[in-house]
Length: 72
Image (cartoon, rainbow, N blue to C red; front, side):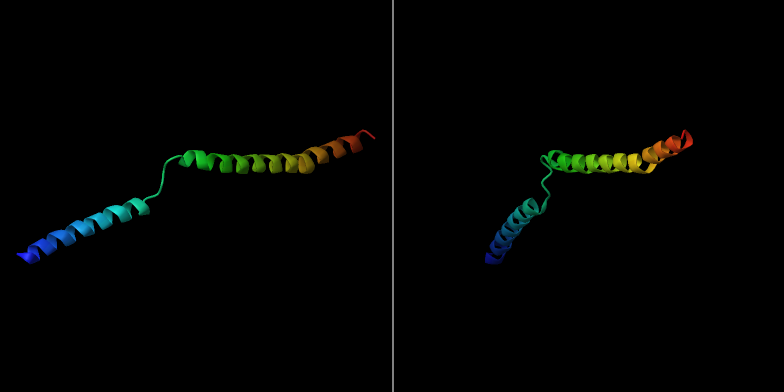
């Protein structure tokens, strides 16, 4: 009889351990978008700025020099 009681009590403790470990192991999805948006915005803005500067230096300035040289 005591073995049945021991089995029940060990089952209860193991299920409580599982419940507590699963709550700590699960990722927190609350405000995940708010956490990622500023970083993604900074990455997007920096890529846009680098692309704009590269376009100006590599394409626009070259075209301006070519047009200026043509009309001299």
